[in-house]
Image (tube, rainbow, N blue to C red; front, side, top):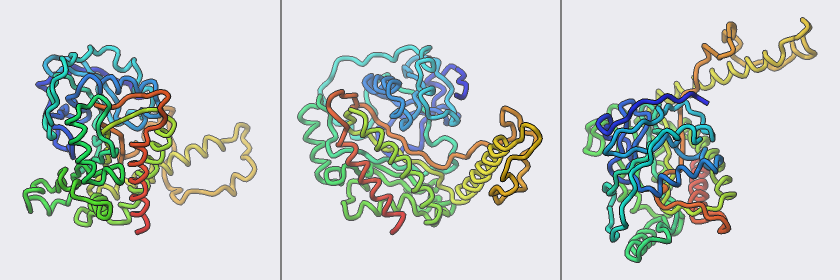
Amino acid sequence: MVAMTHRPLRKSQLIAFDHVAAGHDGILSDTSGEVLAKPCKQAEIDFYESTRAHPDFAYYIPIHCGTLSLGQSQAVPEATTTFPPSLNAHSSAATSHLQPATAVGAPQPWVPSNGGKINTDCAIVLENVAAGLRKPNILDVKLGARLWADDAPPAKRQKLDDLSNITTSKPLGFRIAGMKTWMGGKAAGLSPSSLDGYKIYDRNYGRALTPATVRGGFENYFFIDSAGITKKFARRVIKRFLGDLRGLQEVLAKEESRMYSASLLFVYEGDGASLQADFETEKQVLELETEQQLLELETPQNGVLPNGYLDRPVLKDEGVDIEDEDDDDEGVEALPKIQAVKMIDFAHAAWTPGMGPDENVLHGIRNVIKILEELLTG
């Protein structure tokens, strides 16, 4: 596990986070962009803390670094994108020094937020899944045909049911809640929606999609010729997302939970030149590591080469200098970040022993997988 250091984090040190594709306003970032402070209710904090007992699921959510009262100074772990996605990163040791966030007051009559800020002084501090990407392309996919929890008042149930019925949420179990894609440097300033080279697809875009047209939404997210994201590169990214989604599906099929209005957050490198360079760097690093592992296995203990050593298959790049390696792997370049997908938004999530898997969420994930598979062949 990568060592965690600590530093004070005050509200005055936080800045507005500008890579939100959908969801509530008010998400903040530290100046490094490595961690985010998301305003939330205590229930969401409690759920994140409960994932320590569910390490397989914890792999597929942002690393929980702690909690913060937005009106006070708190110490939080300094998150980096090199944390391994393991139980260690979610351990109580990583957050035991934090003070509890301010408790939420008595429930108030439900009023639609319409994507605005929620009334809370609590914030959960999470890794920024997009950190390390030069031009992150971001997609938020809202999961579930049913979007309300059991404690939702009738007015909220009706509003969310109406929304589900007129969008892809009802038939497919998901809808595109928002996207932000890098269109390339030449696109900057060409329209109000791409002043910085990004194109914004707001919630109304996703709500207008139908089961027949929603595939086009994913095509807009992945196939961006103006930014150098060719179909060849996009499909390499899609294959990685499919591996992650199938793993998440397998984990959720073994859990007993209900996660209403949770989302899938997709991010990948949106600059084509950077993406190509990252693929090349990754290939070189993996080849180097593989060759080092072969040498460690094949190094003779008595000065005699093992049978078949000279006939072994070799990697194409035999010119890579692998000498002078020490036990700390100094000189071995870290793998670049290319893509990630995480489940987020757990304001209405709970573990529900005895109730079986969350088919409401799984139905949506299966249909997202189906569409991504179609993009590989279509």
